[in-house]
Length: 309
Ligand SMILES: CCCCCCCCCCCCC[C@H](O)CC(=O)SCCNC(=O)CCNC(=O)[C@H](O)C(C)(C)COP(=O)(O)OP(=O)(O)OC[C@H]1O[C@@H](n2cnc3c(N)ncnc32)[C@H](O)[C@@H]1OP(=O)(O)O
Ligand SMILES: NC(=O)c1ccc[n+]([C@@H]2O[C@H](COP(=O)([O-])OP(=O)(O)OC[C@H]3O[C@@H](n4cnc5c(N)ncnc54)[C@H](O)[C@@H]3O)[C@@H](O)[C@H]2O)c1
Image (cartoon, rainbow, N blue to C red; front, side):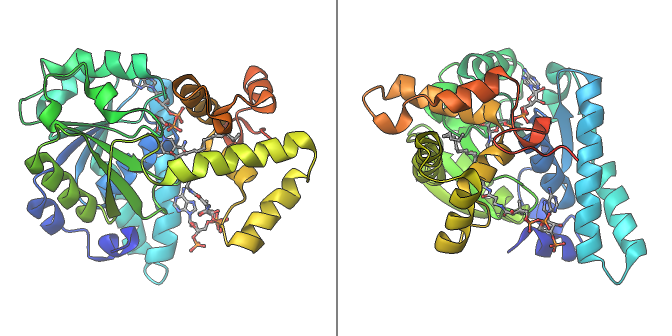
């Protein structure tokens, strides 16, 4: 069931009633957190987005509103007033906070989509493990870190899993639900029911590096950049080749810009540290240069390509 068909099922609370997860806290309102909050609220859940400061929360709200308007234009093309109602009612289910400890008390699920850094993710989960209700499930949207390692600082290892969404969340139907050996069956079933309730197609995999998609995607994207660094082909031709030759909706280089190079660089460096003997994960000088110059891709207006209007 697509995200949109969940919406067109008059986003009643029926799907929420069936799933045990009703109140969702999303920590991090950036590229991914904003999308995760949006699709949760779209399908009738109460969502609180937690960020570092109000300025970022204002940006998050704006980006969710713009994305909802794109969805409304499509789903309610013939009924613009219903589209406006959809946007305002979805936004009414989203609240924001800069204080995570305040909001966890009412959370059935706390899902983090903060910076791809194990120490910072540890600090976050440690800060709420003793104060969140015993029933609250913790999850991470990490691209590349081990769920078991993230969960290692928590007592509730039975209520900890990976929920790996794909960018842009309102469009990409896949959700990777990642179990550790300690994730309980009850937690897993609740997360699978929630995944369905928010209109995602969930697959399940073990807690191995990159889960399924990124284990295949990271080498592909890294090799595309090495091709570029060797001068084998231009960025544009590499992207056209993979779109027309492999049917990808985006080429690997434009996709890297879309993901964001703070994230891509963290992923690659993390895997190089973990697997130093694997040349696939050797650092990329051109990527490090972009990060040093704060050219993080679409999010800053320039990466391998320029996005300045
Ligand atoms: C330097 C690199 C090397 C380093 C090596 C290692 C790096 C690590 C690499 C791994 C990174 C992993 C990241 C993560 O963990 C996993 C991922 O998320 S991978 C990314 C997965 N996503 C994709 O592959 C996206 C592919 N692209 C697309 O699907 C499309 O291009 C697009 C993004 C949907 C845009 O579609 P277009 O047709 O081009 O453009 P439109 O703007 O018209 O959009 C089409 C359609 O979708 C609707 N839409 C688009 N965006 C949104 C949105 N944000 N919200 C709501 N709706 C949206 C839009 O309305 C259009 O609908 P239509 O009107 O056409 O019906
Ligand atoms: N970008 C992608 O395509 C993509 C796809 C899937 C998964 N992911 C993963 O999702 C996570 C977030 O990635 P992103 O691209 O959304 O990053 P982003 O930089 O767009 O957003 C991260 C947000 O987290 C906030 N933040 C950082 N520390 C925080 C804290 N302690 N408390 C509250 N907020 C905090 C930042 O202010 C920022 O707004 C990463 O783990 C990444 O690997 C990214």
